[in-house]
Length: 191
Image (cartoon, rainbow, N blue to C red; front, side, top):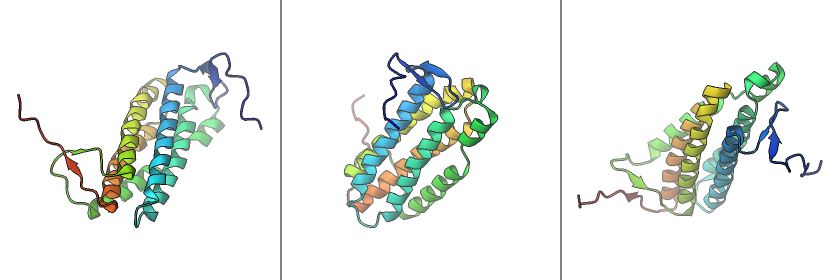
């Protein structure tokens, strides 16, 4: 199979349903943000390789990257335009969200409690995890209207919401593994 098809040369692309839409359509905006998030997690994962005792984190990030492709499948399959078979094939399960919650809880047990806001920092791995977190929030904001207007599964938004929490916690863990101090927000004294 060739990587190029030339079918998108006129500014449209195809959903999993077979429907063609303009590349600036809200579905493709959401897919683009999800793809960008996946790439950022890949960069963060590469930076995590140099940290001690991060095998679990590396495995989790790889799993998350695969689940983001599942998010893309669900977003690219609006139920109102898809066959029942395609909707079923692209359905997003609840298990990945539950995995995120258990990973967050496990990291939280090892981290000091937060008493202030922290600034995105803590070494390259942590900083890229923070950047992935903010990109995740953007992807979530793009998908919320699709849940309402295209009947995309709510579980996709739940997963992305939890994923941003996971990425925040993972960034804190990565900073600790890099022996970097968390930079605490300082309120301006000038009013």
